[in-house]
Image (cartoon, rainbow, N blue to C red; front, side, top):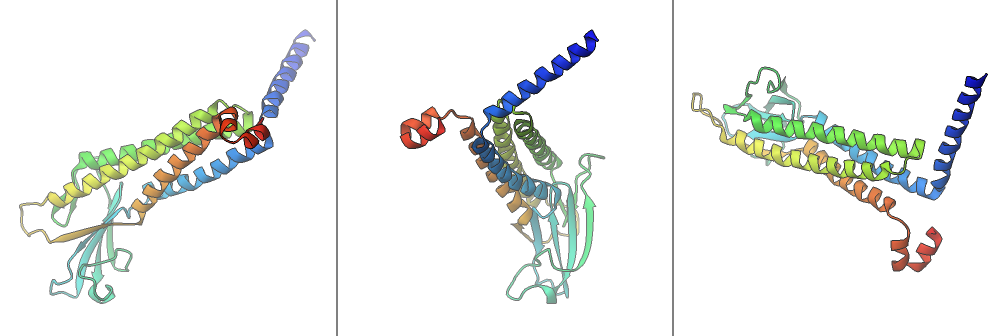
Length: 254
């Protein structure tokens, strides 16, 4: 009986403490947090889409090769795809083969940087695996930090742990920065690939490159996450600094 009364008393104390924490968060404040979390979900979706797809950059050969087909390729952090396209399908007025979304004979392979440690070869050019691996690792770290930030905000909404709001803001800002750094490192990997011409025959074809929609998603994800981080930081500030700038708003906040 004594132990049962003790556990009942402890459970009642925890419920009262949880209710007090929830009571301190006004519906207006909770609504602002949910709006910022909605913005974060847009950035998270773009980040996962960018990291998981292989349309970061397109490599295109020139069409004037005296053949009815031409070669193009597109690659991302984990996989590359080479494509043989019909010249008739390429838009008129375009000097190079592509875009890579056109139907054609495709050959996709995953990079072996993390397994056997081999460099990849594309159009008689060799990747620089250290740079490619760095871009992939930084992107994955960005996703991991973003997931930690989401967990912090969920704890704020479900448990009333408002001190985690600032932690979540830091996580989202760091995640956005890591994604942008990953994009810059990937850009250097593309430059290294174009310069890594193999001296062995056959001769390397002339190439052009253009960044594609996956990389655009990564840029958007980084900017949105940094913006969401700023919103969460604003929500952690007390109302009195805003009262000096806008007395009416500050009076309502108090």
